[in-house]
Length: 178
Image (cartoon, rainbow, N blue to C red):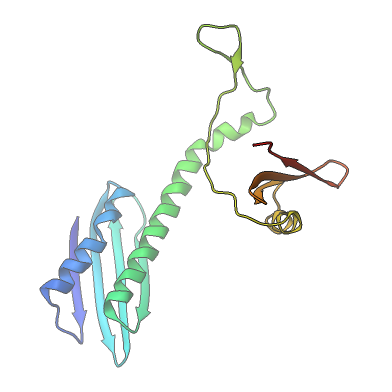
């Protein structure tokens, strides 16, 4: 990827140019078709402004701008904004291709025979790992309602617990014996 750096009202030092190059290294991970990036660094009195425009072949241009009291902080800010923007766009494109699979919602889940025995296993499509936070049952119910979840996993007195919504609009609580 070609990086063009323009400095307005400041001298572009080699260390500053290297820092910009380093921060833009992970941009190429999102799209292989990234052609070039244009970086504009500007100083106006006490404002340090950084702007990045990334041109990707077959995609729209990604443009982010940020300002801070420090030029390096402004570069960090726009690099993070650019990373999030490109990740969001890539996720949108990948999700768009997978959209046709959502039409299968409501169909029975096919069971896959396990190797060597007569039991069946469910096909797992996603695994998420997390660390349950310590809180009371009331706090967990409040958090679950705020986030509109059907259940919420938390730690209650060093016990892994799950609070869930029941069909009769009440709540249930599961606690582990471990």
